[in-house]
Image (cartoon, rainbow, N blue to C red; front, side):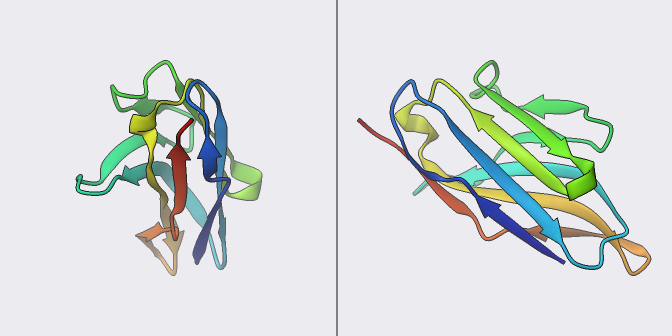
Length: 118
């Protein structure tokens, strides 16, 4: 099972970026999918999460600016980031609970860099 994140890059303050993370491999089912971020010198932070049934939750720092969605048919999760600020600069990592070989396991993507700067 692999998670492949994409969509990072340079964003402007007040601008938008959209991240994607696609899971592939011998997947029976995917449960919750999440986006974390880690900025230099800071602890890894849970940014947003979505259950298979589309229940979502967000870090206070991104509420009202970020949305998370998923495409269950394509095993993909998205993070739409609006009203970007320099404080959103970080490596963004996706995470998913995957049912594989008769057990649930947590998998991580490789991370994608988001830099917000004018």
